[in-house]
Length: 269
Ligand code: SAM
Image (cartoon, rainbow, N blue to C red; front, side, top):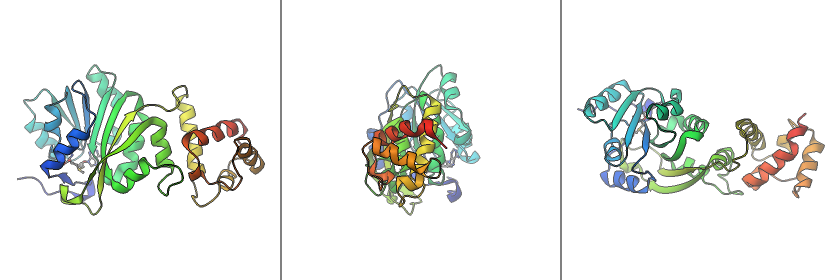
């Protein structure tokens, strides 16, 4: 008997076999990949992936589910199940244990910790080749938004800094058991630094800057950045980049935000 789903752990299992196949087809896995699966749950995708790739390592926080999966795959050298919180997992170390330098990450992820998971994954970007994550449709729209759109913001810019993301498949609530209250979507990411020459420190500082830029979305960039830089410096930096003073952050592309950041960086208050 399968255990009762635990809503607090975001348990919505992929029950529709047609969607499992569609997801599998849409994921950019390679046969020689180490796939790290976040929250394998009852193993809806684990076995399917294991038949196709070098190895699947599943990270499951629910002890009962982790144990069931460990038993199910006990004879399968291509699958390992860790009972752990994904947010405490060192992805570089997992790759190293498999004598590899990079991996592919898949997850029908628990929606209650979407942002922390993305943040954690981006911290390990150097060992991620690509990813496929099932997220709320609303989050998917934010991940792939274009400048000027309602959904464009910090999440979009941080995603674009580290990867090329694409909405690969829309998934309706009925594909899951129990069905979530929201629509879902599979987003695929090819990990590719936008500014390969930037150090980790520069990337972190830039994202702090971007957070500031979007601190109050309806405010102008001048007002948002006025909290950390002298207003005349911000105005000068915007003018230097050819922007009007009443510009809002959402109107600027990643490259344009980076250009303003580079101009202002040495001039912080
Ligand atoms: N992959 C399965 C599927 O598609 O049927 C289950 C997906 S369900 C949306 C999310 C899974 O993540 C659950 O099995 C849940 O127990 C697990 N989970 C929740 N929080 C977690 C965490 N912090 N670390 C690892 N797994 C977690």
